[in-house]
Length: 124
Image (cartoon, rainbow, N blue to C red):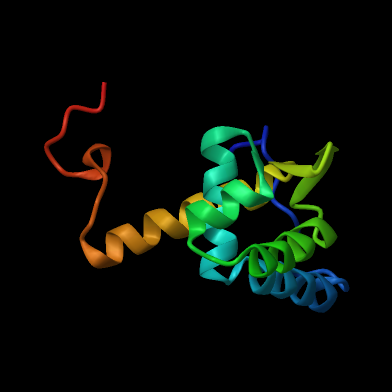
């Protein structure tokens, strides 16, 4: 039986090409290891300053700032200033889910599965 509560978007309509191109742009935005780490850190901790993000990712402040600018333009993160510090938070639930699923897929491919994904593990 098909789940009627969660309709799927039509991928055979006239807007399919435009939708596919936009989806590819979203994947392109997220297809960077530093941006994936930034999103994962923001998911885990909520709000983090750009300086702490630079420290945690092992990237320079300038590099992290460029990545955060792209994520802001893509409406994935939002920022707020507090004195000289700028804090970021994740605002796009879809990007969070895509990144989480990509990380799970990478874990499956490498065999580095989290305990709750292993066969024979009690999932209660």
